[in-house]
Structures are given as structure tokens and as C-alpha cells.
Image 1 (cartoon, rainbow, N blue to C red):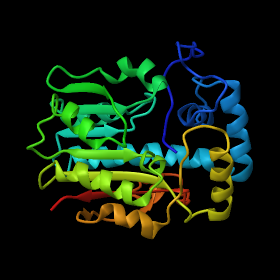
Image 2: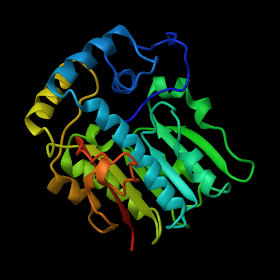
Image 3: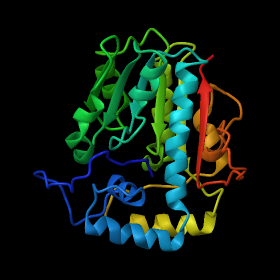
Image 4: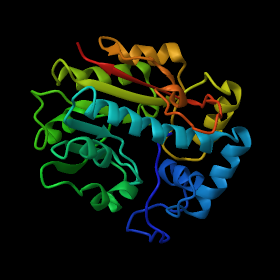
Length: 276
């Protein structure tokens, strides 16, 4: 499940073709994070999922903070100036372009999603510094060739790119296809490029998460899957994980809490890797 919320305080309207009678992952995530871009069906399904895994909102927050820390690392220490954010979700605070362009205003970011909810909010993702650029392309994560062709209109794919895929590979059910999609994307970018993935797992609250996903998949929304840590590691074949490797999102280079509280494992695992 991806991290989605909106900065607006208005209830969503109903754009043409938008299903409000079927739950939606972006809107459920938005509901868990206290947003207003959701409908009663999302609240109902969201509450039912929380009955299996009450700590999922904590995972949503941890996943979002993981993205911000990863992008800061990439735009800072790793020197990346181009980002391909696949499965961008609804805009929230500290979107990829905001974090990256704080490090260097010349950063260029392309957001990718195929969701009418996200498309409705796309303008909020298209702000940019004058020195840099942001773009939004409508494409499916199952179709990496289209993503790459359209991304090349904004990004220079002969130079290093950070490919971020937070909460999106779990919607590619087949393991071989998931690996093939990641491999195709990485094959199109040069040495020094990076890959960022977060993914719901069975490593924390595994039995409850399995029941929650089974319920989710019965609701008629886009089906998703969980993967073990070992299965997730196969998505990083051919690239080098940076420290601390593939871990619970809350444990990837956490910032000091300041209040002495400990780090709690969450149901999403994340990793950042460099293409040699």
C-alpha cells in the first residue's frame, strides 16, 4: 500500500468516471493519515483493515518519512539530480520534488501514476523551482517502456536517475513480472543511478497482514500482494544496497527522536540501492 494524502481541506468532488462505491488504496491511506480526500466506502474498508492490523497508520507515516530521508540522501550525499517517482500517489507535504529541490533547486523530477484520483491532483505535483523541472505522466507501472519513453522528455536518461517505487511493486502480483519491471527500468539508466523501493511485507504482524490483504483483495479494488524480505531482496539483484540495507522503513537511517523513544518496526520494508 502506498503513502497517499492531500494538503487540501476540501472534501473531494466526484470527477466523471470516478468510482465512489469501491474502496481505493490512495483514499484509504489518505483516511488513515487524517486527510479528507476519501469517501465513506474508504473509511469503512479502512476501519475493517485496521481491525486486523491496528498499527497500519504508523506504517503510513513511517513510509512517508522513509521517502523524505531517502530523497535527502540521494540529492545530498549521493549527488542525484534526477528523480523518477513511480506510483506518486496523492500530493502531501515533502513531495519528492520539494525535498530534492531544497537540496539543489536544479533537480528534475518526473511523477508517474495511472490513477484518476492522482490525475485530479496532478497540478499540485507540477510546481518547481525556476532552475529545475517537474512533470507528471500518466502511465502504468506494468508498462516500463511507456514510462521510460515519456520520462525521457524531461529527464536525461544518459545521466544518473533515482527511481523511486514506494508502495507500488506490491500491485504487481507476479514475482517474475515484478522483477522484470524493475530490471527494465534499471537497464535504461546508467551507473550511479539508484533504486528506492518500499513494500508491505509479512515480516511484521505477518498473520494479521495476510488476513488484511485477503480482505482488501475481496473488495474489488486493485489486488495487491505481500512479500517476504527474501523475496524483496530479489528486486534489488544487480544493484548494491546502501547501509543499512533492506529494513523496516522506520529503521532506514532514522533521525534522532529527541524524546528518547525507541524505533518500532512497521509492516513496510524499504531499501535504497546504487547501480554499479
